[in-house]
Length: 403
Image (cartoon, rainbow, N blue to C red; front, side, top):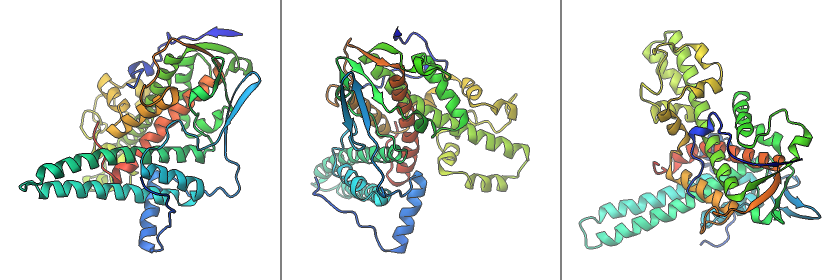
């Protein structure tokens, strides 16, 4: 059974999101410090990322097989679409392959070093403001800023990849390597692993998104999953980039949802001001930042004082998100940092084209199965969700640029 794929079904939530994101050092061996204080600091950082030390221990590395007809190709778990260009990115890639158990410590050290290098260049620029070398140091600081931005994006990318590898789910490699005679198939699908990262509430919304954008129901049969469809490569690139933003949006919205539930509970119990501050101190960093940062205004986070703001309004994430006004939707969907926004663009371009030409604007039609489309959408949503977590962590060590 064949179908003609189209994007005419506008999803109820996705319709508010943009459909297209416009699109050395020598080899080192990481040696963890024996200092208890250094170890404790690195351990705390690893807990903030949600990353755990998981050595290979003889595990077989996961692989993606893209097959069409009699032809097939295998891809190793480290064959990511976007290759690290900076020395820290290449270094972390090597640590992940050879010393995986130390990866999160190495990533924390690289972020701290990048932050120190950038701050030192800025400090020298301010010290030399009244000297003849002011122009030189200003230029050095600008170049150091660009160098550190490229490096921190690579570090963020490797941290995201680490999360995928913990699920034993490799990122889909460049699609040009996966197609044969304009036919794309990705196997195994890894649907269960990619869905396991979401809560039940979020997973229901993700399935609504998949049903809306590719027309595949959550209760679809095996026959429906492997039915073929046609889609323009440009549309597929747009769908993937939009789904990354959608995953980022859902992570932001679900964190906000959890926060409002907590604050509503505080209001109902009529806690005094001191107890309220103590309560906020107990919140996870990612949720607490929503209170102290981008969602601190009274209009965006009502403390149960607005009309009709009751616990029953917070029963389901789907209903909660549908109540967002356009401004709040844009705020949750837009990446907070320029580094995150640029990383989405780079990854999408590397997957569907290359970083120089961007997502190919071509009318070429490819044939694929609904199962492969679902795999791509689930990966994109997971990428966006992981990006929200990693961005939150990195910003505590290396101050990212506001987007």
